[in-house]
Length: 127
Length: 127
DNA sequence: CCATCAATTAAACAAATGCTTAATTGTTGA
DNA sequence: TCAACAATTAAGCATTTGTTTAATTGATGG
Image (cartoon, rainbow over all chains, first blue to last red; front, side, top):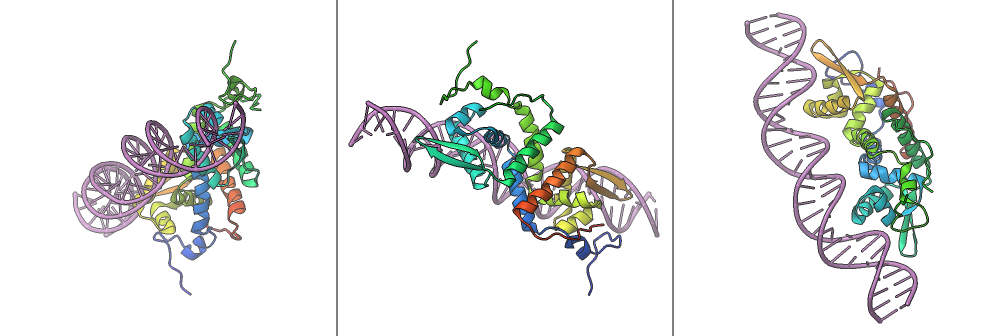
């Protein structure tokens, strides 16, 4: 059975090299996760909701954005399974979903922040 | 000293709640990192370059894209400090940068992929 | 049942993104 | 020095994205 070589052949076979690669869909799903957090506003909101549960108006106030804009982002985050919502009276409260994925993302956010931009973060208390 | 309350006051003070929050710039820098990997093509390229070093033509072949498109993505990844390049003859070879950040991102990519889309990945060998 | 407030949805729009084709730069070997 | 090939850059374009303002839906308390 013949396998095509790469354009610049160094001996390896395409099939061998690409055989171990995750399928394109996997990258698509993963990229979607990163895209969710690839927006500053959404990242701030997600970070916030990893630390406390809040209603839309308060989130808006805390991140300094309009309610519709925040609602828009919350919809995306929820669609991506990163946050959950629960209505209590007039307000709808949001918080980070309690899943392995979100825990992983949150700890990663903190880690990268430590590496990229240390800012001295003691006493985080958003209760 | 007076601090304003949140629109929906549950007792907390804005200053208290926002005091522990990383500055906006930090989120901006972090979002930029996620944005780099928030594109399927770029994510595949980065993943590839975490596993092997290759020239542009071969990368193009492996991900099924044109050279200019790949070059474009490589420029972005390099600007973000995720990959490095070295010219050898006519070819320019790229690979993942050897930094704590890239190691963290790579391991995270694998972790999330495990969670999100298990596909049975034994024998990864892209040598 | 109605006034009020919270939240979402709709419509519109400017800005950013990713790709294509074409032109340009850089390097090697004949 | 020139022909051939690798890579980048430029220009143009269609799509997507994030936001705004306005309209709509949802829920409570008087």
